[in-house]
Amino acid sequence: MHIAEGFLPPAHAIAWGVASAPFVVHGVRSLSREVRENPESTLLLGASGAFTFVLSALKIPSVTGSCSHPTGTGLGAILFRPPIMAVLGTITLLFQALLLAHGGLTTLGANVFSMAIVGPWAGYAVFRLLRRYDVPLMMAVFFGAFVADLSTYCVTSVQLALAFPDPSSGFLGALGKFGSIFAVTQIPLAVSEGLLTVLVMRLLVQSSKGDLTRLGVFLTRKQARTEKAETEAVAR
Image (cartoon, rainbow, N blue to C red; front, side, top):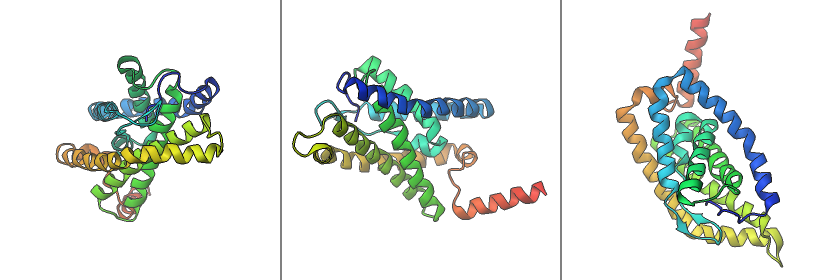
């Protein structure tokens, strides 16, 4: 869903950049704190960024001026929370624009907003909601990654519809056209990404269970209540 270089009108490109900036700045602070307080997270942070870079580089031609591809942001959002994923996603998009001609510098703000901000927040919200109601971990991971992918494509459709409304039916008509074209490739990609993210999480459970426990990935609502009660008891 990378919007190509120069495809958005300048006013839209600037507006999306301004909208994205506060999230990225907050993410930089969160990332710095995580690395400072937990230096052992560096390897897992790198792996999360690499996962996003590789998956989102697998582009399939779709809407003119954009493309379809997995996003890979659900995994990082689940592990490290959406603010940190905003930074990892921005770095990914910047390197892809510079090295792969995938996306662009003028459209970086729009691409960051859809893939590195909205996608991670939507996916993480679904993951935490499902875990709150004791849904099994891997099922919650699947739907978190699935929603992170689909929400990115929905936002990109909105961005393109705002920039290029239909001459007769306006924004809503354009949104329907962009959304329906994206859906042909994006829904199967979202399912595939959900399954791949589950596979990666299974491997992490086997190899990095301590890190996942520290990051709170395993917590359900009942476990969170128990942990909170134990913390309060120790404090008293």
